[in-house]
Picture (spheres, rainbow, N blue to C red):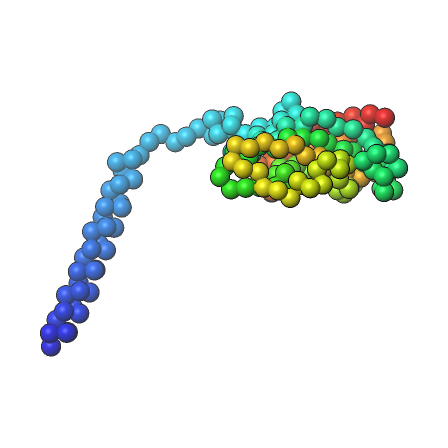
Length: 182
């Protein structure tokens, strides 16, 4: 009998405690009600302009672009010319990210030479052997590392467009067109 009374008292206590916390939760948002944050303010913090993409978690600065023909240094084994990009990636959060992953999270690379479909370029071989050993290392919080990437070109006339997004499948931040320099 004592066990039954104790069990019932325990269940009732927990039930009442749960009700009390629900009431507190309902009142708390009323006390913290503030004006909504303007989406304009958030949009100013993320962008792609002047060769720099900034997201909340990382920043990528494009330092150089160059076309490398097959057989030339940086494209020794390729069969197509490549559009090579040298950049710096800065990690702005605690979690580490590799420079390659940082790039792929942000950018889509397009050569708009097909009137019927979007022509996303294929990734080529690493164009700068300096980054062979460091391409998979994680960037520390507030750390900046240099890296390079290359994309196989379909022709040597159509400009390349870099489209920056707020993460994979996220909102487009902007795009920049790069002329093919030979």
